[in-house]
Length: 302
Image (cartoon, rainbow, N blue to C red; front, top):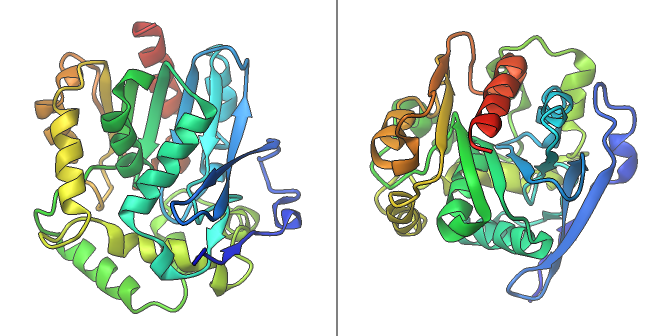
């Protein structure tokens, strides 16, 4: 049986502060045959190597509005994709529709359909977990990776913070936007907060962002853990440039950058950075620093 799909009305995205990028859409099919439309921002020359920006939960391409103009100065094509269930992408209506394997499959199909190559990936939070899986599955399509406040969980246990967050979201009927606002250390205007909430006109659109925490493969018996362990083994052979830029104040993925630096061959000799004032949503706290780091990385590895 095919999934029920919700699509956020276009008028929810009119007049968002700092965001006037045209939408682009790619249609893929789920394994059950359901068509799913995935949205991305696509700026800069189409024939230039792409910088692909991947967001996490519960954000969308809006998170990159302060970075896209600066990244275009590199001369690259800049693509910011919305994960399925987020932003302007389609939203399967049932929480049961969302699995880690499906997220990996959906974004793999998006990557292949667009036939992106020579990619520099910048990824944060879930955009990192999914993005790093894509790098492990299609290493030939990537020329370099910048990982920020993210990781690939391997079923090795969870911190007290993550235990609280996963437990809370298992029982949630709606997404706790007040926690998102508290966790966003950058001073957002009311209009910017409304822009983050724009994709979700009502709680029925929130199935994907409510389910994400449960899919984090932290527990040894989490069904995603074996898939991630296999992906990690492949990443341990990735010898193209791999940079970590983490926020010192991020409680979510603290410490994962050290593992990446130690175990991913391409991380050797890179200019890894910790940004002292940056929290989890580093794109809001340190957009200029991230643009500088990505631009230097692209120049160094051109």
